[in-house]
Image (cartoon, rainbow, N blue to C red; front, side):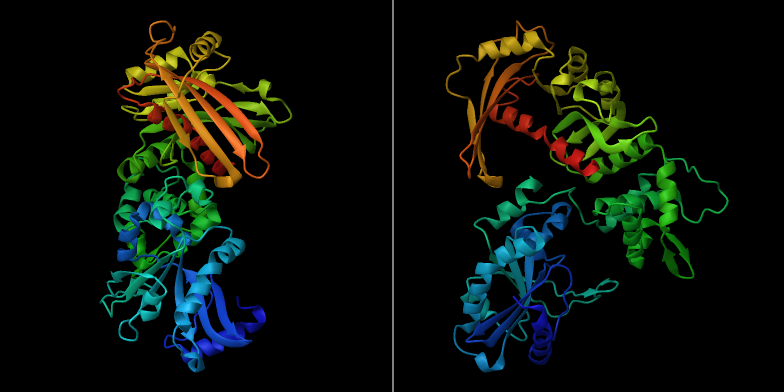
Length: 513
């Protein structure tokens, strides 16, 4: 890699010999120099991937909702220069090969996340791309020929570029479209890139919310302010300052789509103080309802929802106690459909000192969500007959855990599987995070007529075995549960996947913390 003391020389030679000139470091960028006996042979720049590339995106198989937060897993070979005195056979392909061998480790060490794919664009008016073909890069096709400008993209197509990619892992398409962000070492909430229709629709979701501000002095309509705040949050902004900076960076076309105020031929965005003032004065329930309207139109459709409580870190009220909330979170989208404060916990107290009302608030909270056809998962505290009955009446299905708060239920299921034979399904996960996990599940309908719990269709036992790769340490866990899904509706594999999906709520709690 190029040292800081070498950067001036690197840029000088790139400006002198490369037909596109030098390129400044923007975002995640690494510069390389290939040497032979202390002489510079070639220079490469590896930088952030292109925001849009039709042939690449179709090859990967992702859509705009998922690609934005995962583009960092792709890097672009934005400059490749073989110095004039080194135009010898096979030099280019050899340099590319050496770069591929080290860039993954360098990227992980410098930026803290993996790199799965390299891409590059070749101008056919200048080159044929032979050096990339010789290095086993894959040619995907041509770009449409539009280039980025300050206003968006050029009005007319220019010369299309050849698109080449080089996988840095065995199955880049599978990895880049993997539903679990943690599997890709991506933390936090998923980000998206808003398209034109989404920008237009976001303000419409907030039209029914009454404006708490005085009519005098209003410069920006409330739906516009809330729509911009929601759009910034969807694109990964956190905090009023970040939302305001995102709004300031919007182009005139984007501002027009959001419905911004126009003065002297320019569309104006609300300031940070206006955004803050509106957000703190809006009723949370009204905001949740408006966002759910947008989620139903554009969000990932969840087949299962997780219902779980969480004591919030550092969320201390006027009495010196931490807030405890109950949330409904989608297994697949990680979207929080609804949440409500249901109690408090003394900061210095133990877990047994919680003064919460999760059981009493579960049904009122679920009434704000569309439950028909969905699986509702919950931990042992919410394994309650009234909740089970309500869910089935709403044409939903429950998936509950059985523990000590339902001692008869727990004892009966444990006794049924005490002498269990071969499991109905076994799942072995890849050795991620330094451990190997094996999950086995047994399902049965034998207790349906005997368990005093409404609408039971199956009971199950899940055995989880964990082996730490470094130490060889072995651990074993057992989980018992019940579901209203029949074996015809939910196979053992689906029951296991639903149970595991419940813990997706923890990632949302992490973000809120």
